[in-house]
Image (tube, rainbow, N blue to C red; front, side, top):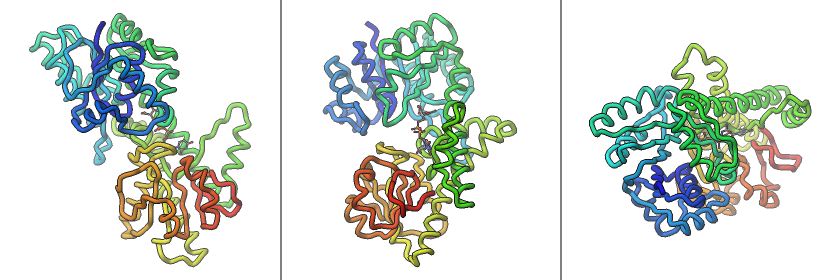
Length: 408
Ligand code: SAJ
């Protein structure tokens, strides 16, 4: 049986390697982070995710291995980070290129490299194919490149791994069928085989579509605030139309996907991306909108001291511990720019201190503040309403049912 070497054991690579092992395939998970590999070898899971413990146990039973070394085989799945450069919003393909080079050092003569990491359209042709052609030729290996972008949503990853449909971008149909047979060991959704460029593009536009739709909800929230209308009631009514499905406004868009991928299109097609750019700007403006709401509430209640304000939630969305690009971090950055500091912060999922004035205990946090700003709708806060109903609450996620709560 072919061994699959999954490279990068983060939010995508780890669940993917576990589900492949659970399905009975031979899997080696590789990560260059020694500490992470040691944690996994000890049987510990590095992040919180619904259902991951059971999956982990099943994978261990099926003898999954973890290592810092690349494994000699003919099938690789790359799930390494693809950060973007903040100065020009372009994708940084360094990790993918390094991983491909490391694979070339060990792989068998005829091998498949499946890239799951999100990449901007054209990345494979521009950066990866030349590496394969140059070094592959020198080393005498024949590599088949595949792009099978991941689609799972943090918070519901395990379910979605199994049930979402998948895209497999390939140069040749036979390789597509081979890869499809591997993904169908665990994926119950439709598996579509297409060309690499279409796979790259479809992934990026899926996240762009969501960004634009969230931006619409956020713009409605601003319009309704301006004229004192209830945006949630209005969206609720509009959504009863059979062809309308407006998303929910919020304090901003975070995470490593939706707030990042649309920039790839803006960066590559600056003259053709008016709508996409505007949507990005609207979503990026939401933390500032929250700041204005905080200022209004402080004025109304004669509170002059910003340290009486507490932000609940540092994660980018509910019930996850991932803080990448989170609206709360964006908001704190804005405050720093205006030399305002002292606002208190708490998140039950974030166990490390990553910002100033971050509390580790919810009651201590509440004792210090007068205004509570709900930035993330973790289940934890929903179960703590009794504790907060004496506070001034700015509920940016529309989860509080008490009358006096301020909304976006
Ligand atoms: N958000 C709103 N209003 C909404 C929905 C979301 O403000 O109505 C905010 C969230 O609070 C969060 C951000 O948007 O800050 C993004 O959250 P999300 O839950 O919409 O999506 P992600 O970033 O966790 O995952 C997305 C998913 N893509 C799509 O739904 C099109 C997921 O399927 C992808 O795999 C993932 O990006 C990725 O890795 O690309």
